[in-house]
Length: 331
Image 1 (cartoon, rainbow, N blue to C red):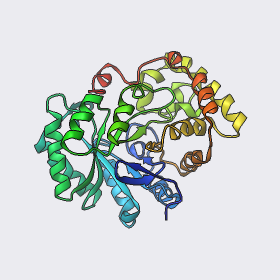
Image 2: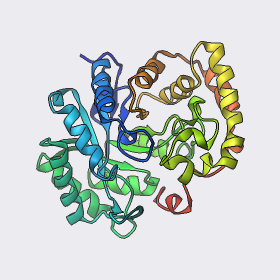
Image 3: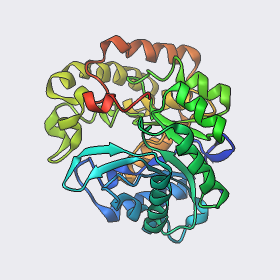
């Protein structure tokens, strides 16, 4: 029995907080598969049901890890994975996006095999393919629903008009996009569109890729091979130094409330609405427990305004992604 409040992504019921599994296998330093599996198991014990992965994490190895972890606990999991971003095997930093019908079905079969499951609960298009009409992509996903291979359809980082066009072909259950105190660009148009259509919102990086926890004060803190310092403009040496003022302000407010800066930042996201299910990522049990405890933080409307005032968007230095990455969002 879930110990967490239940929220709904469209018609899909999940615990109020999910677990992002990406960093267990890719992009962040310090891989430890045993601890990652233990973290997934503890998440399920705590009532976290939504586990989020993608075929491009690794690539492929994160799905295999999640599949092993849930092998004996499949009925406790709302399993979400993604397709569309195709990484170059010779240079994983290079990538293409595919949403053509043939690829959708090919990718789904491969994910089912790696995850060792007979269906995927929530299948996202990781990025919109500008070369393929969204109607073709969602039409192929609808066929997978009819075949029982996936249960619900999701989009990631899509623009409002694309969301509408997709939803007209087949109901979309969830939109996954970055949303945190320092990434709020979906609030003006995209979130209202989702709410009009009954689509849930799944914020990724609700802790600013860990930065809003206060754990990182220089690029050296990320560790060797960690993509954040190399490929995240906000976390470059110059911008990170400027953005530390945000964490300092957040920490003061958190101390006043007896919580950590990360818990306060996460609680702010959790309070965005009953249709919002953030997926903070971690590969360690101690951070998982801290994140789940953020669900107990209660914030008033005045609290929310004070927190937002402490992190004014104009004070954030740097874009969310490098130039090429920014071209792939909001399509």
